[in-house]
View 1 (cartoon, rainbow, N blue to C red):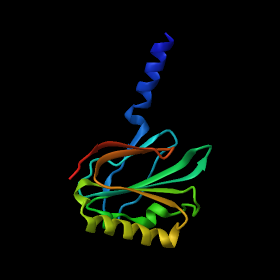
View 2 (cartoon, rainbow, N blue to C red):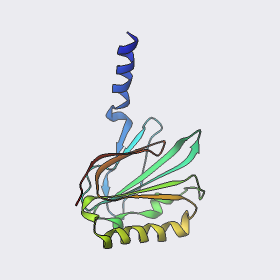
View 3 (cartoon, rainbow, N blue to C red):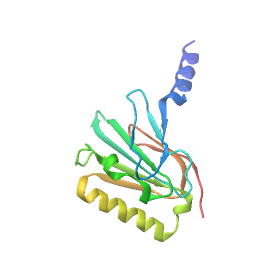
View 4 (cartoon, one colour):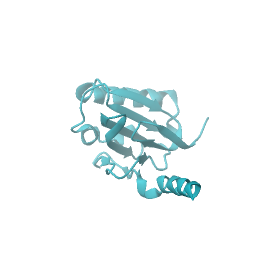
Length: 154
């Protein structure tokens, strides 16, 4: 019976009710927040899109706040003002930038990095940023673990 309970718990952790899949938006959209019952933020399908996910307010190795934005069409579609609003400027704040497989050129990678650096410089310069390029779908949990669900290499 104990073994069955362990497997049942694992199934429940993978349940879609614990996942928020970001909605593809334009610059006029608003960042989305994980509810307290959700464990994962998922990018959803990416092509030329860029997702930016911010984790902040870390307590006992778990981020209490996870906020994300799925910029439909690329980094220019990300509403950084909405995304960074109220985010503390400290070295425990983490920013994950996940760009789709159609953003793999060196020009696009540089554009994404420079745009994020410029936006963070005026709002959360002490935050740690991590880039993942060429990812077709991924999810980030409250511990800051990135799980790649699908990717494409050129």
